[in-house]
Image (cartoon, rainbow, N blue to C red; front, side):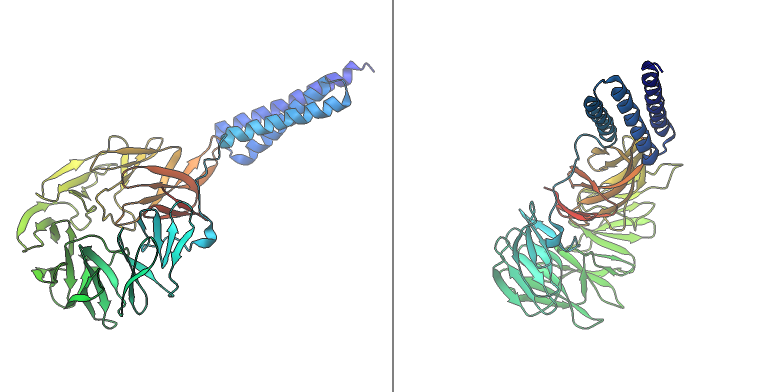
Length: 447
């Protein structure tokens, strides 16, 4: 037998296997057969190329070396084509030191305060910790952190954790202004009282019966977060009208607030619903400032100069109505591209910046209707869910990407209130707090 005949057979075998591999790769891309057929195609292409190189070489040792090298290069090329050259992995904390994001976490400079522990926001290292069982921050500022336990309230210095004062009451922070923190104290299972604490001493400077909140929606609503800044609070009296109190001295400024509907404080305006009308009142004396008809006055998002609610759906699109808080003037706003999917998730926006998920023809984006900023989420085929930290305005986005083989990967992104996008990180499912994202099996600092 001619020595050329086995070589020709080898060439033919290598060409056939490599061709089958290439066809399988092409078919996978065209018909979106996903990773397994793509992997088989890469393997066949690598084997075919290795056979061709091995047949072409004369010496056995070079046949082996060249065949392995070519096969490895083909496989590596296929993997790089699928995954990219860089891993795009976000820096993350050691999961063992952190129990997870909660609504009571907040940032103070370079520290994240969660539970009774302060973490370095970049590394996750514990800076200080107070071991008092179940403990949550109810106020986090640059000059003071106030923590609540099951039986007392403790104020500490943010950078060191050194105790500033201690109060023998267990409460929940509602709002703070200057040196006064308003807390909700449970007198019994059904009775509450509003207390004004002096942040310099921890002493109670005023005390009123009723349940203090920042808003009502068919009754008093607690947003599970640290206390926001606010000059007034709503105090609900079960079985009677609610009232608005001044944070500074606990005096009643508005005596007739209907908490059976939707009422809340936005800056220097008390918002209330009246049928299909949104009313703006002065929290200082109850004077009606404006009255604006809207489609859904009970679903109003935001806490800045403009607030937003949905207009009636028009075909496949949804419009937003922007309402000026000071004057009540309303106008319709729409994103520069795509279609609004929904205005809110399971939480409400109680921050100045509002971001809305927008479905694009080939992906997804986030749109700020107040500033008209538009942030495209690279490679995101869709955003399936999102989670809002109500008062800080950070957003966690859970979505999907699809590679050229049609395989789906679930990922997470985080969006800051000013529109900076972080990610992606492996999902599915993610939660965000002020400058921290909990996604998959890792915790990511967003600094």
